[in-house]
Length: 68
Image 1 (tube, rainbow, N blue to C red):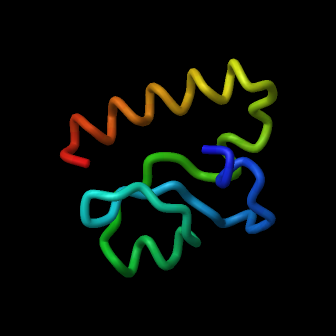
Image 2 (cartoon, one colour):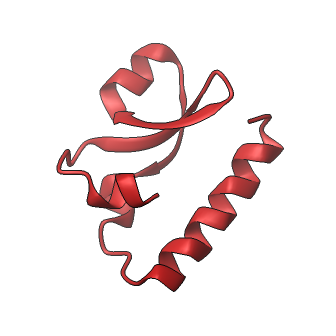
């Protein structure tokens, strides 16, 4: 999550690809058929470690439920 929030790429996305969560440009994720979990533009205003940790935990649960 920190890597996504801190990304300078406005089109960056946190994606689930082949069982792993990675940050990559959303266009690349679409070409690879990766599942987008969050987009930079959706989380760029997340501030503070507590808020970031909470969001990361929820996305981790989602990714695990999807087979990561």
